[in-house]
Image (cartoon, rainbow, N blue to C red; front, side):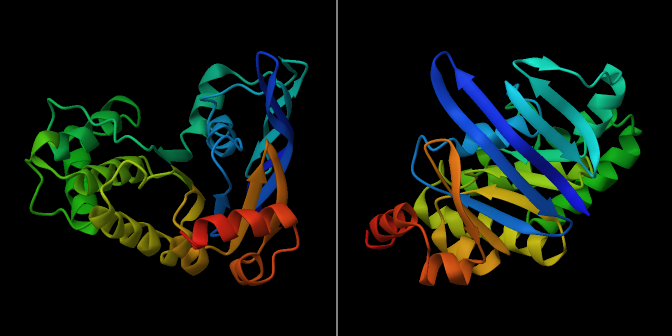
Length: 254
């Protein structure tokens, strides 16, 4: 069963076509890495999957449930707003910027949405937050504020916060691009552990090492379209598309 599927997704910003008939199906427990040059539409595509960007045309399914069926900007799926919001909670997201509340501790950053959105008790939410901080290697930083944490630590708190909502799929939008190089590894290690534990993941990343080691499939996007999708050993060793070859040559020879 596809955990998430898009069919012919299109998106424009003004006259600029950002996504052109993007179709992708991601199976349960699959890790898919999306690579490509800046401006290829990778982040925009990711943001359409949890409604941060509305699509102009196409369909989006979550666990075989049709959430959006849009033609010329008009959605024909008439789901109650509460039902659609509940479905979208199954899609967790980690951004380039950590977006932590500066006035809350690491623990309370993770507690907040659990209490207000998932309607958990504070005690239950704090227990889950503490366990997740332990899982991402920050069990000793529960009471630290974001300003007291490194960028890598803040991003690990952001990952724990997303996991606290118990999503069925995790989206990562270039989660290491805002980090100093020496901090990238600690975030990638957490992501690899999630992949090994069976989390369904779609990762937009410039980290080719992660794509090669952790992905089940690599998708190459260029100018708003998917040009190639294949297992990492094929993409990195014998890509079929000339644009893919040019891109990999430019990033791997740096």
